[in-house]
Length: 144
Image 1 (spheres, rainbow, N blue to C red):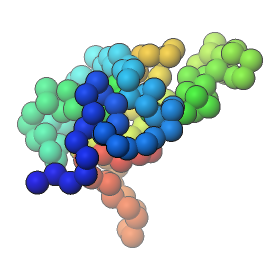
Image 2 (image 1 turned 90 degrees about the vertical axis):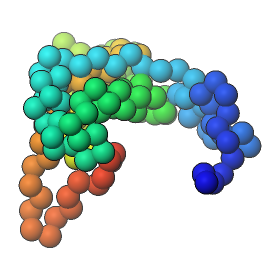
Image 3 (image 1 turned 90 degrees about the horizontal axis):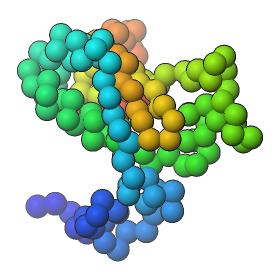
Image 4 (image 1 turned 120 degrees about the vertical axis):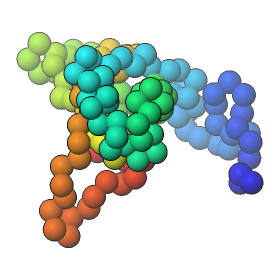
């Protein structure tokens, strides 16, 4: 049986759990998640290598979409990773923001935040072999 308090209705934290305001705000708001054609092709090509969603690319996309849709970053991190300075001006040439990577279900997912409520998945690729004694994949989901 599951442990801990039951989840609250409406996407917030479980009943009786206190979290910082930026976390509860992030849980009540979802990003739109889109995949580039290259990312969709990567999912299809690597479907047989997935761990939890082996040969189930649609289920993999749905799970990844749910993870990326929930944005629980602090306001500082949101500004930082959407390319906004304290003055509200975009950083970098043309406002370009470096992409992020995360290991998810045995593959590397490259994505970027666009604006306040959009995530664009740019690539889904095979995890590079870890050097001898290095760390491999962190499991179904891990940060990067």
